[in-house]
Length: 72
Image 1 (tube, rainbow, N blue to C red):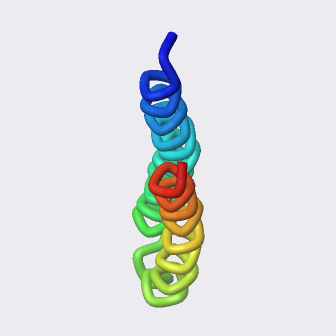
Image 2 (cartoon, rainbow, N blue to C red):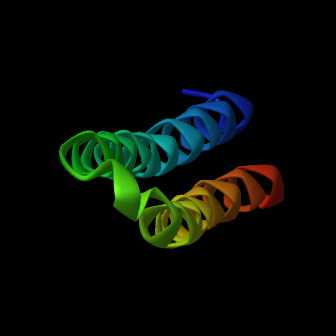
């Protein structure tokens, strides 16, 4: 296997595996928030901000994976 092919494989794995965890986390956060709001609609303002923060932190991990893929 050539070095160029190995570099492309490493980049693909870095962004693929690095994006899988945050994608699952964002889905679970959104599911939990919508379930909570569905059970208690009055708490939507208390749930919305922590939900966005959790999603932003999970998305930051995906951005780190993208940066690693670019630096390889």
